[in-house]
Amino acid sequence: MSERPESPTGDAEPDARRPRSVYGVGSDPDVRFSLANERTALAWVRTGLALVAGGVALTTLAALADLPWVIDAVALVACLAGGLLAASALFSWRRAERALREGRSLPAPAALPWLVGGVVVLALVLAAYAVFELAGDL
Amino acid sequence: MSRDPVARDPGLQPERTALAWQRTALSTSMVALVVAFACLRSGFLIGTLVAGAVAVGGGVMLFTGRGRRGAWTPLVRITALIIATAVIGGVLALLILF
Image (tube, rainbow over all chains, first blue to last red):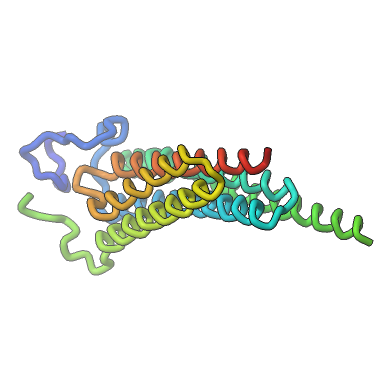
């Protein structure tokens, strides 16, 4: 490990970066790749945050306008899914950084199918609910 | 410390990463403030306190940024802040649901 030419911290001081499960393996990749990985993780974190914000907005709207309980349940699920998505960003950052350091190919995005599936299910549930309500009014 | 390998990156990757950190911290702070006011409206004062603390934490991260010790620690911090916001938002939804 001593002959790493691209070490950003210089060659004298020991590598104190954490976690060791990431920085203890392989060698430093091009810094731009690490930065891109970091920005990807941040984008996922912001996606989760947007879900939380949407859930809170729906909750507030449901309390103000006395909406049916389905809206409130959707808001609850959105909040929890946002928290889960933020946590998954952390783990996918770690997987991708390990793959970068070991020169392996990058893992597939694990959260993406879940996010897409969740949005599709949400759309179907809300559409079915809207049709149900309309049919009840007629 | 004599040489920064990305000091002259024409793609401006360090700047873009710093901006990504800034907008993430700013969004976290703003969402936490919204949650705090929503909790205040519903009389959920513990939620207001926690969300206010999250907003302050997001504000601190906005100014400290990423630091130079790698991305892991600030990523864990921002994720913890967002999970706290999500839990408070979920409890608020449950309170209004029942």
